[in-house]
Image 1: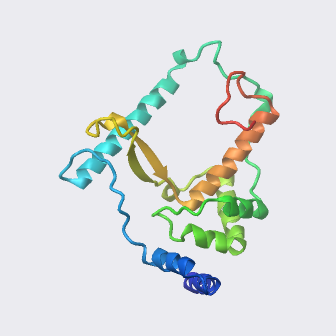
Image 2 (image 1 turned 60 degrees about the vertical axis):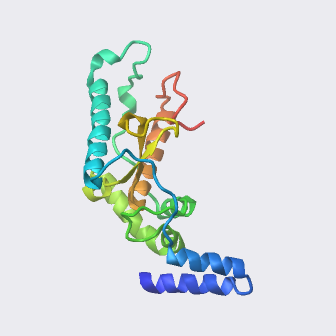
Length: 214
């Protein structure tokens, strides 16, 4: 099915490019996927695996520190303590509709993750056929309160914050994660439910301006 869809897609693209040499050249070039001339900025290293492990430990340590700070109740003060309203607790997530999943797929950028088995363009091309099955997967995750371990994996790229910073210092890098498309869909569905709940029950703190709809 995937091979046939891919062949059909490129046949149509080639036909549409008939008489337009520039578009045809771009299409053929994209098929060959030439190696990019971009060279990432990284610390000096002799062992790539060791460098990856070092970055993993460094970024993981930063996350652990944040979690420890959040677990410390002394960090909450009367001025920033979240509102308490037991009557407005979020007990369950509203199931995702097939139409909702279709809209999310269409709105996604044409950016794939190396962990994806299907490229983003094919997801979008076959959104009508894929949406029902994806909705079932998403709703199963919501109903069972379970986010599959396989979908928690990410392709993490360390990017230096500023070109002028010392490339040998890991603190000068930030992690950029690219997760599978299905993971992104589940995240967007859950995020929309939480934001709707917070807005409807007026649970945002007075001084919060980020990470909420305006």
